[in-house]
Length: 94
Ligand SMILES: Cc1cc2nc3c(=O)[nH]c(=O)nc-3n(C[C@H](O)[C@H](O)[C@H](O)COP(=O)(O)OP(=O)(O)OC[C@H]3O[C@@H](n4cnc5c(N)ncnc54)[C@H](O)[C@@H]3O)c2cc1C
Image (tube, rainbow, N blue to C red; front, side, top):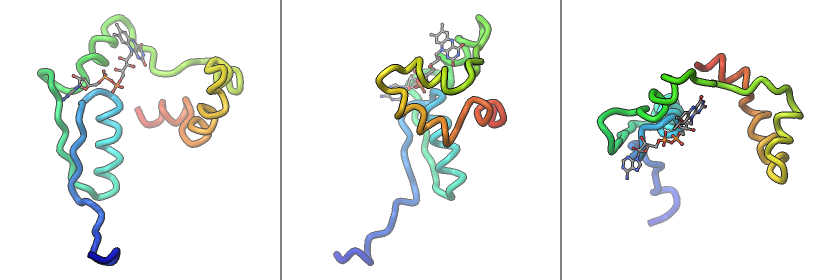
C-alpha cells in the first residue's frame, strides 16, 4: 500500500471517561471524528463528580510564572502547555 492510500482514522476509541478522556473526546469530535467513549464505571466523570462534592477547585489562583515553578524541573514543559491553554482558558472552556 502506498502512502497515498493510507487514510487517517475517522473513528477513534477513547478509553476512560474522566476529565482527560472527555476532553480528548470533545476535541476529536470538534475535529470531525467519530468517537466511541468507553468507561468501566457506571457513568463518565465519576471521580470528578465526587471531587466536586467537597468543593471543586477548577484552577489554581497563582499567577504565572509562579504557578509554572511549582512543577520544579518540569516547569518549562508545563509552561509550554500553559502557553497554549492557561487557567483562564480552562475557566472560559468550563
Ligand atoms: C477526593 C478528591 C478530590 C479532588 N478534588 C479535585 C479538585 O478540587 N480539583 C481538581 O482539579 N481535581 C480534583 N481531584 C482530582 C481529579 O478528580 C483528577 O485529577 C481527575 O479526575 C483526573 O482525570 P483523569 O481523566 O486523568 O482520570 P480519572 O478521573 O481517574 O478518569 C479515568 C477514567 O478511566 C476509567 N477507566 C480506567 N481504566 C479503564 C478501562 N480499562 N476501560 C474503561 N474505562 C477505564 C476509570 O473508571 C475513570 O473513570 C480530586 C480527586 C479526588 C479523589
